[in-house]
Length: 338
Image (cartoon, rainbow, N blue to C red; front, side, top):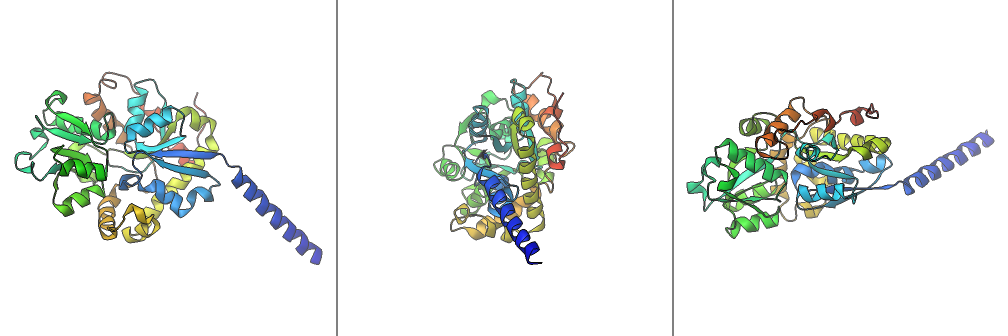
C-alpha cells in the first residue's frame, strides 16, 4: 500500500512539473486591442482577469492601440498574432487581397453611438444635418469612419460634404468635444455615459441595442470580434481553438453575471473614480454581447451591404463572406481549407 502511495505521489509531482514546464514553454501570443478600455472590447481584458487564457495553457499578452485600424496594421505587419477589433475589417481587407478571419464574435451590434455636441445640437437633429460639419472618428479607415460614412450616405449626404477628424477615444474624444474641434462624433461606452453625465453631448444615433442598430443599419451588425490572419489560424489550429474557447467562456460569464459582478473583475484603472458610472455604462452595453461567440446568421450580409455602399475598395468586388469568419474553432471542428 505504501509503495502505491509513493508511486501516486511521484506521479502527481511529475504531472505537475510537466504541466508547469508546458506552461513555461507556451509560445507567447500577443493580441492587440483597438482601445482596451472600451466596453465593446471588454471580453479581451476580462478573459485575462478571469484566468481563462491560463486555464487553456496559453501565454497571452493584451496590448492596446487607440483605433482599430492601428491594431489591424500591427496584425498585418506580423507584430501581433491576433486583434480584438471590428469584424468589418475582415471584409475590407479581403477586398485588398488580405486573408483575415474572425474566430469569435463578441458583439452582435456595434455598440457605437453618434454623439452630437450640446452646443451644436440645436441645428443638428439627424445625420441629414452633417453638411459642413466636422465629425469625430477614432481614426481614418477605422470602423467608426466606416459607420459614420454609411449613416451620412443613408441620410443623403456624400462624404465630400463633411469632414472626418481622427480624435481617438476616451479622454481625447471628450477633449475634442469640449474644445469644439468636432460638432459630433462616434464613440462607445464608457465615454458615452461620461459625456451625458457632464452634459457636453447628446445621443444622435444609438447602436448599443439590436433595435437601434436595425433602425440605423438595416440589420444585425456583428462588430467587436477576435480576428487573426487566416494563415496563422490554419497553421496554429490548437492555439486558435484554445483562444476561441477562452473568449467563449468569458462571453458566457458576461451572460450569467451582473454588471456589478463583472466590474469587480476588471482592473480599477478601467473605471478610475467613476465606478458607478462604469457599472451603468456596462449595464447599457450588455445586450450587445453574444452568448457563445458565434457569428449571427444575418450578420455578414449586413456588414457587406454597409461597406459596399461607400467603400471604393469593397464596392463592386466579389467578397467570399465564408472566408471572413469561422465558427469552427469554437466547436473544435476546424479543418484546413482546400
